[in-house]
Length: 337
Image (cartoon, rainbow, N blue to C red):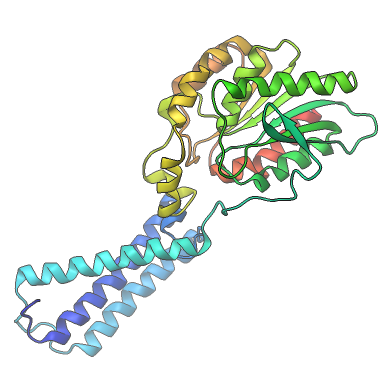
C-alpha cells in the first residue's frame, strides 16, 4: 500500500509511535480519572503512570535508534510518514480501549441471592430485613437502577447496622423504574410495613436516578420524616453523555449505558427540583464532583440549599464508589446521628 524505502524503517516508525502514544494515553487517562482508557480497567497511581510513560518513551527511542541505524536517511514521503504515525496512534488507542475492558466496572450481572425470601410490591421484587430486636425506624431503600443488584449490599448493611428495618427494592438487571408506575412503590411499602407493626421514624434512601424517585415520593407522603439522596441527577442536563462516562466503565459499557433507557425523560417527569423545594429541610443530598454518571448541577444544588436541604459535595468519589462504600459510610453516620 505504501511505497516506502526501506520497509523496515516504516515498521519501526509505526512501533515507535504506537509505544509513545500508548504511554501518553495511559498517563493522560490516569490524570483525568478515565478508567475506561486504563489498561486493566483500574486507575493506576499517578506516580506509577507517569513513570511508566517515561520508561515507554525512553525504551521506544532506544529500541528505534538501535534497530534503525539509518533512520535519518531519506526515502519516506511526508504523506506516507503521516499515515504511519497515524496508524501507530490508532493502534495505541485501540490497545487502551480493549485493555480497559479486562477489568470493567461495574461488573455485569447481579446477585441472585440478594432478594432470597422476598416478595413483590407494585410489581417489583422487594426484601425486608432487620438485625435488631427493637428497630429504631423504617428505611425504604431504592437502589441505583443503573448498577447490579449486588451493589446495594453496602447500603443494606449500613441500614441494618443502625438498627432500622430495611425494605429494599430490586429493579432487576434488565429492568428500570417506569414513570408513573414507580410512584406507587414507596407509599405501598410504607403502608405494608406500618400495617405489620407501628414504627417510627420513616426514612427513604435512594441512589442514582432512584434518588430522584425517592425525593419525589417523599415529598408527597407526610409519613416520611427524612430522605437521603445519594448521587441524584436533579436536572436532565446533569446526565452525562460524553467522555466522562469512562471514569466509570469501558467504552462498550458506556455505549450500552447510553442506549439502555431515557434517563432525561425520567428526570423531567419526576420534576425532582420541585420535589426538593417542597421537602426543604427533610432532604439530604450527597453528590460528587467526580461522578461519571451525573455531573452536579450548580443551579439545582443552589436551589436545594436555598430551600433548606442539606447538600454535601464530595471531591473525588466516582458514582460507583458513591453508590457503594462511600455512600454506605455517610448513610451510617446520617442514620446514627
